[in-house]
Length: 349
Image 1: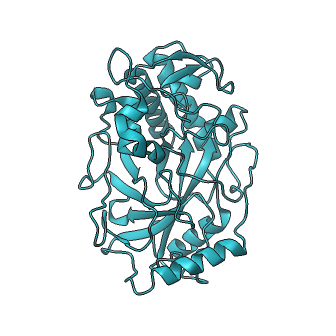
Image 2 (image 1 turned 30 degrees about the vertical axis):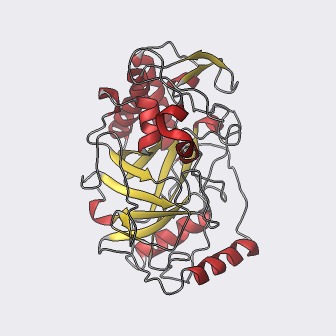
Image 3 (image 1 turned 45 degrees about the vertical axis):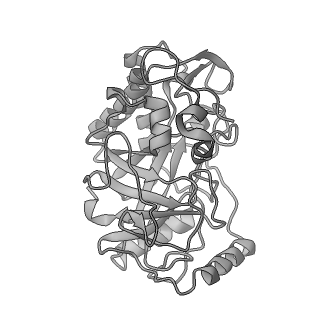
């Protein structure tokens, strides 16, 4: 379960349930599930494997396909692509590949380059589908469809830094160390120019992390202990980790920094003050509690619904930095298949 959080200004933050309500708690569960093995990496890291796709998954896809029969399918409007992330998804076709269940072109795959908990020896899972990465890469290089293969790093807040001392300077160093590890873990399959900082409150320790808040709101006795030493971390210190990661990434690579999160999770960590504003950073947002695959996205809304993408940190879907939307799966809900994304290819930096 997710514990109490502290506010974005001096003094204690209200509990997470008070910030977003009971329904919102589900939206903060880890939206990225276990998948198949990772690609070869530039650095020396352990390979972590997950379950392959079995016949039952194919059967679920067929059932969902029947359920959405008659709904127009296709990436829209022009320049937008459908994609998936994390879980190995039963992508269809033999090339060009198609988005599972909903149809349209398979426009991209985004997997986990690394997990802070795994890096620190805490046993956290690393989520990568070599199969989907290969399909997304083939669609881009051979058929000129989509954006190819991207990657995210499962971020740690300052509270699980072994050298935590409550300063912004140390938090920035912690962010730089994570960026260095993320760059080392990027596989050769990754071509998408944005490396995503996965900033969330998963609430399912110890499967992915020993710290239910990933160290964003509480300080732990050690990275792997799962035991809180001190409650409350100032939003400015949290922000130091983001700034450190971004500055190191841009100084040591051609990659661009981006953040994967959602408004409820972002506010619960960074509040609503200056520390929460991230102009210039690219964004990939997710929508909680959207399990239906009946209505497909067109731009930043699901057709025939009032459900639209909402970005965070002072940004909006009209901004050039708004790149991706995880519109079904993730966010604490399951559609029975996996995580579906909408990607604005025209904004690829």
